[in-house]
Image (cartoon, rainbow, N blue to C red; front, side):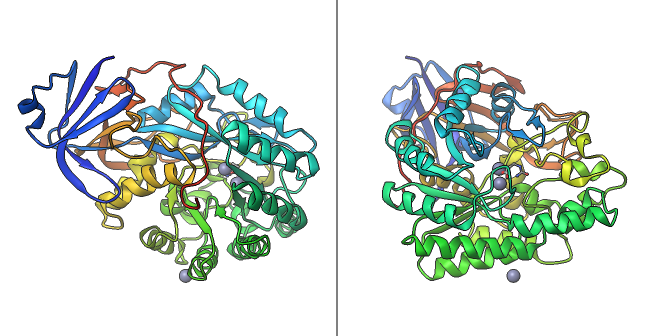
Amino acid sequence: MSTTLFANGTIVSATGRQAGDVLVDGERIVAILAPGQAESMGVVADRTVDATGKYVIPGGIDAHTHMELPFGGTFASDTFETGTIAAAWGGITTIVDFAVQKTGELVQDGLAAWHEKAAGNCAIDYAFHQIIGGVDDDSLKAMDYLVDNEGITSFKLFMAYPGVFYSDDGQILRAMQKAGENGAMIMMHAENGIAIDVLVAQALARGETDPMYHSLTRPAELEGEATHRAIELSKVAGNVPLYIVHMSASEALEEVAAAQHAGLNVFAETCPQYLYLSLEDHLMQPGFEGAKWVCSTPLRTKHEHHQKDLWKGLRMNELAIVSTDHCPFCMKDQKELGLGNFSAIPNGIGSVEHRMELLYQGVVTGELTLERWVETCCTTPARMFGLDKKGAIAPGMDADIVVWDPNTKTKLGINDKHHMNMDHSAWEGFEIDGKVDTVMARGMVVMENDTFTGKVGHGQYVKRGLSQYLH
Ligand code: URP
Ligand code: ZN
Ligand code: ZN
Ligand code: ZN
């Protein structure tokens, strides 16, 4: 085993910061030492990473990615290989990706296909949620099996995308009741897809085909309504834990906050795109450019208070986690499928590489504390989704460690810092205060000196336990 000492940095956790050193032996953290303690104890590590003037934080956990997701007649453009390498560049040391059961397929077959895509191809550790695209007796039984045997303890359902992933209210209720029995978390894509499809058809009939209509046909009210309905259904199922994914609208946040105040097991995440990007500045760019920012839930208007509310929600813990919903598509041959018809543009934005960088800007602007940055990006994702060895710097935990340099700047863009497999960046021109300096993923330094030093295949599948928020 080889030892590494992260020396002279400021160790930041979800609850505080301290000067000190972190000692790693092999794949695990073995000690946190006070300044000077290593020397007085005669600890000589095989290598030392000097973190003077820098923050030492737990590796980022992106709990919402879609590598190679089939969508709209194509596949998300990052493979597990390219996507996890890009993630490593961005200080992410674990992803939780979504295995897919499409309507009409068996859950086990969808999961097996996902393992095949990922196994041996990841640079960092990975775990899975399971999308249930067809709630029936078989898939309900499979949910128990996955919780008991596969380390999959969360299931995503869709109130949107009729005919693809959609579940009706009866199906949702049945899946929630099942989760009530086996202790799993239900994750919800909360948009009223039936009403959205009516608005989409009406817009297209009027000749409204540009990318911006993607947002205008998915109004915030229909995110709020679906969020409300999901909460009521989870209540009827027995206060079953519910996690609303990719929240973009104040209307939805208000539903979640009210449910939390009423004592319900309701959690939510947002994504960087909803904190920084908008209908007017991005989706409405001339010509077909806006297609780069077509994702669901959609980017909202900047003339209401969605972004302000989401930042507040993050501070108040109404939003517990920031995930990326990384689902990249190139413009060429992929987003272009929707030229002349916004509803045929594959949905998704690629951000897995930039999550730590983008959220750190909230620290710079005073929206978040350093500790809250670590909590929402590293610690809570681990606890929420049962990654028991990850998300904190403490003896016995996996050696997933990021050294963050607050004194350097980074520029994002296709010709700047960009390692995702895309022909554009949704973050083109963004100037970032701070920089990912060094990344260790389960004991292996995977990024240092602006070089990827990891290995495809180092990443292992992690079986998850039940959510620590509930048990
Ligand atoms: O636009 C998105 N979010 N694409 C990925 C699929 C999903 O709904 O999360
Ligand atoms: Zn979704
Ligand atoms: Zn509001
Ligand atoms: Zn998603």
